[in-house]
Image (tube, rainbow, N blue to C red; front, side):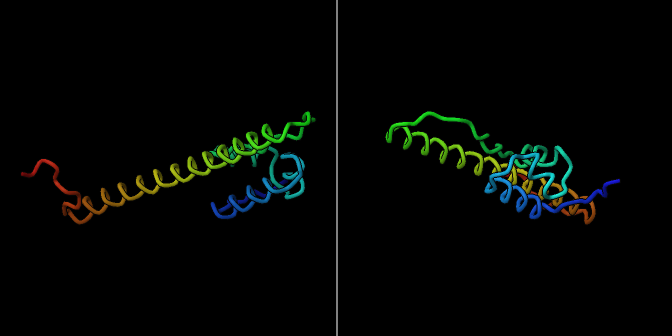
Length: 118
């Protein structure tokens, strides 16, 4: 029976970065690292990342087409990175709101600025 292990976000991101750099398929990487079969897929969804493209036979592209393809790939990678940063900042904002609510309830002091004060 396989042991279940809780991974920290840093560990997960480290595994994902290593997977993206490797030439292994998702299932081969999971087997190699002793992870459950759908772990990488779940982590990719959780962190709003896109899986690496599967290796397929591609025709020879002209240099300008190749440059466009590379640029598109770079932009898609940047979009994924920005989406992950946005998701993380939204989570941080929610945590701060929760902290403020808890502080207001616990200590009975208004922390938030009153918006209808004139």
